[in-house]
Image 1 (cartoon, rainbow, N blue to C red):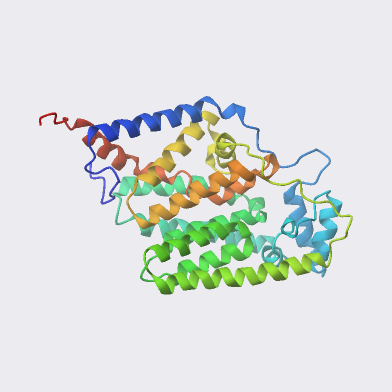
Image 2: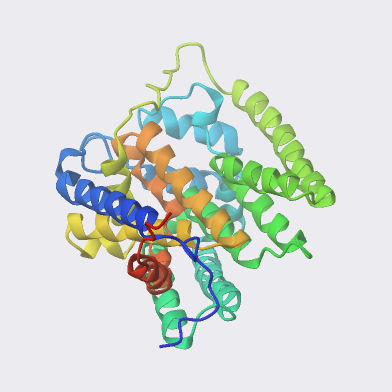
Length: 356
């Protein structure tokens, strides 16, 4: 079977390194399968009496739609739901709420669906020169599975959904010779959810490493505009916060890799699979992305590994939906495994030369 033009990092490897890599992969899979039950279960609310985050976002949007100012409405709803109001980034950036209040939830649901369709088209075009039709179709099905949770009407209320779609689109449409569409997509993600910042910095850092100075300057400009936006956001929050308002309990929960795998599974089609199976497939998918020798694969790897680590280190059980940031591409790396294992099999067949 023709496996396409994808090049893996294991072309030309000898038997020893290939054996070591396979052993390490088996150990990771065993760890993922052995201990997912030890991680806390993701949950939407901390108690039955507390508002869910989704309801909070809906109430804020309704208040803004009724004519209220975003920051006053958000502060009132946060107090009503027993949420912290300090530090200032406990308030979401107003971009998404203002869009929902202006255009209505139904319109925004359609926009989410269009973004999902656009994302699949973008990655079809990206992978079409690299994969034969069966593997290309498999990659699209896997991306659709990663998008499954975002097709539910309520999921668009999570700011992370919008950032996730735009970041995955950013990587799919990125071309070094014509970077501006990707820069626009990345900037939009950042203005909706500040958690997109690490990926924007990674894009700018790679542009510097690859000596594309104009592109690096454009990413720096995006970060500068975002910084100004955050300064204004902090100022506007300070005008509605009271001295007695509660502060956040913090985010450094260190819930671990198993919690991250559970969370990603919960926001994708992995929720339909046994936990151990979903965790193993996510590990294999990341291995697939890591193994491809390509700039777009490096960027996807940074996105998946970076946001997976963020969920593992900083998320609480009730903020599992941060995993949405990694969801769209989380299973697509499985489509590269035939190429990867073919090259590793070739390495395994090499006979060591012990002659002096």
